[in-house]
Amino acid sequence: MNKQPQIKKYQGLETYSETSKIIIAMISFFLVISCTTNNQDSNWSIAFKNDKDGNVIHGSKNELINAIRNGADIRIGWGSKGKKHQIEHLSDPIWIAILDEKEIMIHLHPQVLSSINWDKYTVNYADSTLLRKEWRVVLTTKGEFDAVWYDRKEQLVSKRIPQNHVITWFVRGVNGKKRNSLPFFNQRKF
Image 1: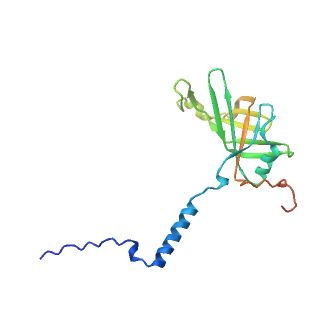
Image 2: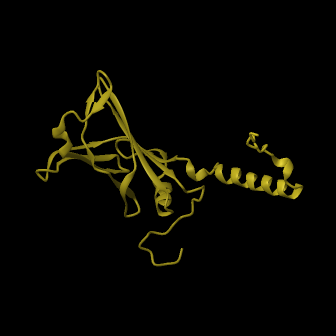
């Protein structure tokens, strides 16, 4: 006599007590709520935008300074438009300084250079000689943008191109708090 394997039938929530069902529903609700973020801190907003001469287009430097002092994330956007092509950049700084409570300067991460084929809109590292060169930049709220190409093998600056740009300064993480923070060197309590 062959015995057939017994297959257990799936039993759903009907096997649980009403109290257990309520607890499962509450846990599920809290999991969904905790995983859903509609948090203002996750959104980037423009705190300041300057023209090429450092004049205010939007926002204020004080708002940007307060955001920095409150620990906000900072992101910088800029671009250029030539006769044939235009390009926009977005980057996070590696270093930020507030100068005499009037201006802000930032350094960007060094980048190895790549080649752009403007006819096909492709980029690559086909020219391996560029891999030994880094593009380094410092920017300010005065519109200053000082770019250098640094040759890592020769350990020298191979090209320097000081320029001015319209720069957009984004912030994230201030969550509507615009308290006037004290300078970092201030010894008073917050």
